[in-house]
Length: 70
Image (cartoon, rainbow, N blue to C red; front, top):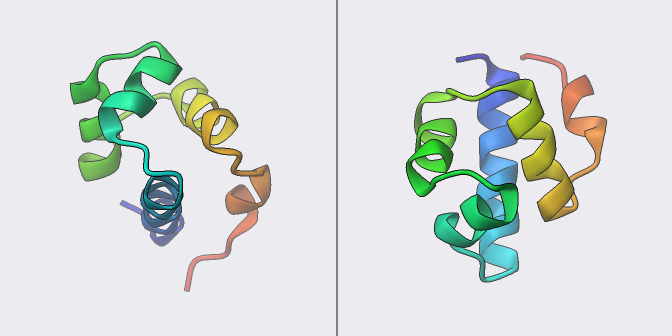
C-alpha cells in the first residue's frame, strides 16, 4: 500500500473519530456493507468511486490525492 493511501486511511479514521461515527455508520452512508469499509481501511481494497464517496460523506476534500510520497 502506498504512503499516500496510508495517509488517506489515517485521515478517514481521524474524521470518523472527530464526528463520533463508526465504520458501520460510514458503510450505511456510503451504501455498502461494513466489511467493505473494514477491508478498505485495513487492506486498501476498494474502488476509487467508493473512496470518493467516503470523502464526500466525511467532508474530506480532494487535496489528499495530491499528497506526495515520502
